[in-house]
Length: 326
Image (cartoon, rainbow, N blue to C red; front, side, top):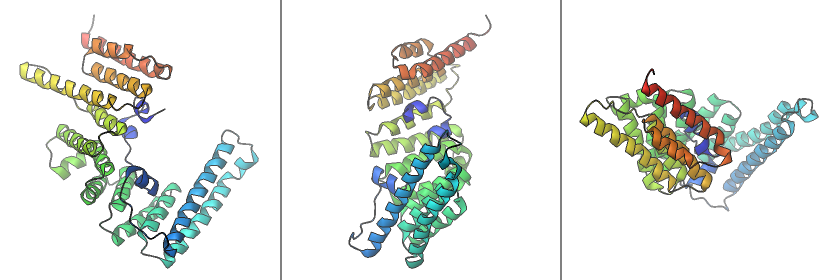
């Protein structure tokens, strides 16, 4: 199931998790990687460390798959011990390398990633902080530390460190998207940091950051859907007069347009129908019940049947509640 469809079943925080800029993410997102000499013996040793780390991760993944659902399988009985032993070998490689090359920032970040995977978060932070001290103009340690703070606090540091990553790499959309998510999730801290009057202003700040990220990567479907999902959190003003009704209508149209923009970037029919479900859900939240039902009529993919039914029930419930006692 793709990320867009998972968003229909999960809370905001889980569908918009901030991303750590690991070496793999750096390659995938175009984050600048330092120019190095591939013939340098230190660089070659470092690359062997990364390869050994990747091999261990892949091997452990296979062990876990083999033991899954088979508690009496011989491999399952020794699984934890084998995993510890396998990663101990990788960790020994990192510690030996860093003993001889203590100022190697990328090795410290890679070691921090391993420690985080092993649940040794305090030790991971030590390595990331050391990498940040060694290369304070490198956005990656700031981003990765912000990711840690997003899970364990403090939230204020999460926002501040993501913001610093944006300052250091203003052309990298990943950092702006991460900051946007942090601002939307940690609204109380964002209000203080940016001196904003209320949650509505905070969410508008997050929207602006997402739009900046989209400008840098306009063809990114996932980024477009992340922006559009933010409209679930924006309350519609009560339409008590012509002015407030116009504001409410403008917000409703703005949210639906965000989903239309995402639909243009859909990679396949499943994406397109997933967007239709989101639009139906949003239209239902905004009281446009007939429009919501019409959008759902276009959803025919069997993999979306349960989600379609859930959203349809939600629309029906909202419409009955709005109508009041019969």
